[in-house]
Image 1: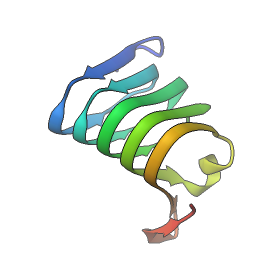
Image 2: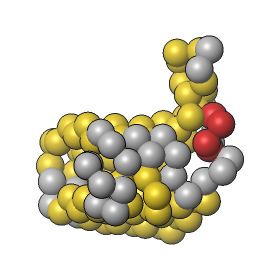
Image 3: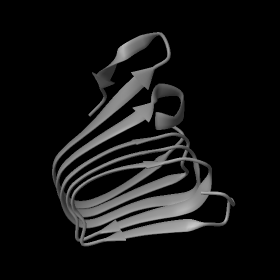
Image 4: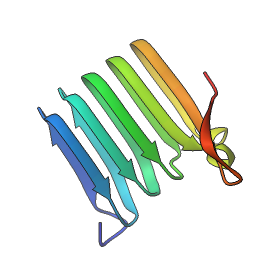
Length: 110
């Protein structure tokens, strides 16, 4: 991402690993299976809808919306975790793991 207003949409991806650099507006992941994503900060939202087997690591983001998703692993920095609004609906097998600066091993939050 080269400009803060840019957004990314992933649609019908399968068996994909993505690393996104820079600060953008939002990321939307729809109808995907077995997706892994690492990204920095977002200005608005990360939205994941109708997906199976999603793993992501994200920096600072105001809102994470997860809807109709199974097997979701969320890695977030401890200091940003409680500043994020989490909106979930019809989600199964979801884990939120905190990453701490002094500890390289993620700590299960939920």
